[in-house]
Image (cartoon, rainbow, N blue to C red; front, side, top):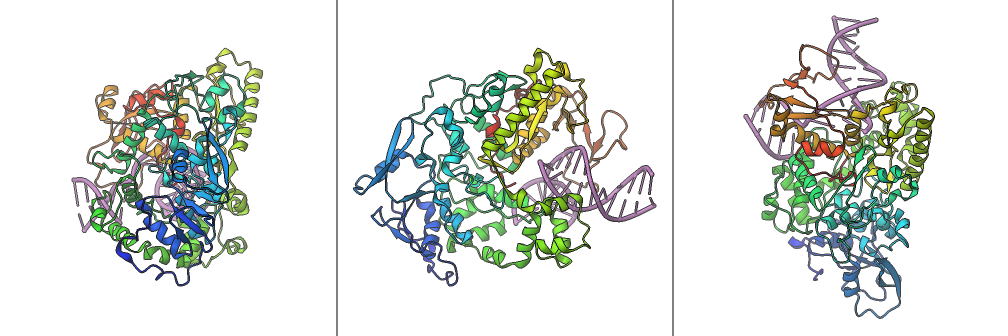
Length: 587
DNA sequence: CGGACGTCGCATATTG
DNA sequence: CAACATGCGA
DNA sequence: GTCCG
């Protein structure tokens, strides 16, 4: 513990301060966090916070490591004799915390700064100190700690798949699950082989109350069985390996045999608005996040993979000054601000936003009043419901929606004369909800009719109808986070030539869509000239056995996957349950 | 240095 | 009007 | 912005 060290470089604290809002004035802060928090500490102090060596009567906040356990907290608080409040933190354990002191993660500091005001402390409670639900059934929230730690906490954040930046090193939320998977800690009764209903499939198949489906908690080792049309089975830490494998492959950041315990640098911010560079920047950020050692010297920065010369300069600047000149520049950049706002209108991409800007649009009201811009239908809708669309939907509401749809669905099946194979019906919310997010920006419900009703024509009221043979692919497509989806496809494309060869001697990869998985051949020299645009459209040039684009050939036969586990197996990957299918979503 | 950086379907714009 | 190109979200 | 050929 010696949190009191100055940031490296000893840059005069306060120099950049001049006009910065003193966000933390009046705060008396105790830092329980570690070395790599030096910059955060420094910033908090620059902005008016007063650091204290230990909890005292006038302490307002304790900044904790995100993975702080109740036990650790208790240890650090030994010697505190003031008034306390008791918090039950699960497994019958409880901890006594000083009255009137807020316990928050470092995120509270870093997120409050750009907001220019203090964010609600409850939303940054370290999961280890989150009050445990009274009963398992009431675990509805705190599902994966998100709620307990902070419902949303980022409702109106820039990106919608929030909370991720802390992933790796900060086992909060769903990550906590992962970490427990990897390294079961004391109190968890991992010996139990109980089947844990961690996701909805089991609940509905068993005809149970949909309300209980939120239970993502439970013994770390989920042992899951086949239910309905889907498998959901996990055991041990393998899913994590798969996640890491895909992540490494996707980002090309093969950090030499790194799989160390949580220690890390601070998660960098992502920027939007970058068309082409974003991939490179994501990669650099990913490299930083994966890096498990504190960055203290410039030489340290040079060791991080994925950083090119430009990125290194920026990281080094942050290392030295605690901030980057680019941040101030970006904040002051009018055009950037306007574009960012315009991009928030659904249906608007960089092209439209830039065009409008060049035509003088500066605000949403400009956009509303202009008649010369020819908004698309989607953009009109997006503008009209701008505020509504920014609203997040609480998890409970998604659950309710899902329940209603499911009941109606099964009722309909019955009315249509669906038979006993109704067990092979799928009707569940997917997307971020399935991944355990405390709130969602939309409700995706995937319905797959049972084989006995495969002939049923529902096209007049459903736009997407999946044949039962395609449901595993649909699930895989809709259930995964975007980045996980990308990574999986990328892996299938280029990472499993061997497996593909077994299907077709000419194949060197697979192509996965939302309805099938087919072997493909892609010419090795794909990094070469390419024509204008891929042949997305209908049949063209190539005559026989599957069309192609850029020389890629689609081959036979398609891979038959009766369930999602097969997809993973064919790709040589350990099955990953839906709620673990993301890494670090910037999207 | 030049080119890729995932892939798809849909809606809309442009072109012939 | 059809064929193609672009923009967009997922 | 970075990697690859």
